[in-house]
Amino acid sequence: MCGIAGVFQEPASQTVKTMVKRISHRGPDGHGVVDVHQGTLGHTRLAILDVEGGHQPMDYQETSIVFNGEIYNYRELKRKYLPNLRVKTHSDTEVLIHLYRKMGPKCVKLLDGMFAFAIQHDGEIFMARDHIGIKPLYYGKSADGKKFFFASEIKALMGQVERIKEFPAGNWYHSRLGWHKYYHLEKTIHPFDGAELDALPAIKSTLRNAVYKRLLADVPVGVSLSGGLDSSIVTALAREETEHLHSFAVGVEGSPDLGAAQQMSRYLDTVHHEYVYNTQDMVEALPNVLYHLESFDPALVRSAIPNYFLAKLASEHVKVILTGEGADEVFAGYDYLARYETPDELQDEMLHITNALHNTNLQRADRMSMAFGLEARVPFLDVKSVSLAMGIPANWKLHNGRVPKALLRQSFADDLPEQIVNRPKAKFSKGAGSSELIAQEAVEKITDDEFTSERDRLKKDWNYRLQNKEALYYYRVLREFYDDEWILPTMGNSRSL
Image (cartoon, rainbow, N blue to C red; front, side, top):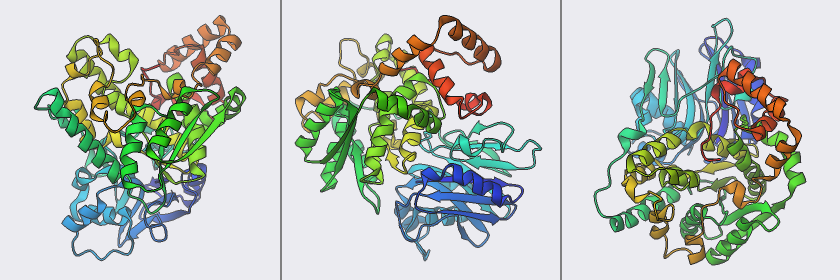
């Protein structure tokens, strides 16, 4: 896990050094900036695999790469496609550079993991982003159109490009071949063939494999444990393979997450850590949260605040955490999904919110963890896990008279305490006790006229719908760091507030 930045068409080492410095929080273990053929590549490293040898930018002959993420199947890819390769490191990056040299762009479809990378090969550019958009990537051209810039975060591109664009998830770009969408969620869904009870062992085995592969690391791995269903499942599966598993929970005094997490920790015998914060802590942290988040979407900010404290706590003990992100999208866990009464309507909405994760919940998960040089991994969004979950008939996920995520609960009923299996869905911000505190302050401080004026301006200038006073409160703080032109064109909108 790292931060990447660079420029193509013309070398610009000093500019790229500045860009890398702006995202240095993503990689506290080293950095590098190297001029390549018609460009400059920059990298700031969080050492997870091959701590001693996996430094970047990495090159081989006329090929250079900067890479952010993890390729969980890189050893299998080496054995199958590069059996005679004598590697200099034990990193996934080195395998990727040779895989691209052998296969070209089609190598991307073989990658199992989360990634965003840029390769310069023989004067040509190749870039790609993972299937769902777990790892971020942005790009743009200079005002004169002569330089092509890219970076892991928006802040690195500010002032360098005329317009910031988000590199689309599930796509690759080649300077000669153009854009190509290699992953379509809708086309990867394989309808489940069987009865409801037949789905339970498939769900369990698929998630177990997804968790196991995400334990790959040469550094300590922990888990985010809120005591909710999703994080408890991930923790239980990780505990099967980890002797001293560190778990982390945060919340305000008396919040339900803290108690539930303690219960799960005792049940699974994890090495548990918790952090209790108050309203003043949230107010003081908010500018940092928004600076890193690069969004003022209210639902994201609400959950980003406890995520920020969680990442800070976890980073003091481990370099990697597994989280329960994505379960509510693919198993229909959100309360608002109860409004959908037909399977087709529910399936369409699940497809929409899963496809939108790249600049909503996954942006929040990435930015808050990487603010502290911490890697977050998301087993529920494993490609096979998503395909299975979305292929389960939507009528089995309808909320009509059923508890949300009923199949997921049944799949792990024998592995978790009954209270956890039956615990109602609570968004992280609610479970951690922070969801309403700053929202109330926004209502008290912003007048109706102020809100109407700003809502109308943002609609006119950016075609952006300002949801409420809470959003305006966050927007004003965010404006201390970014002008509208850097944030609004790429900002996502959560539907689950």
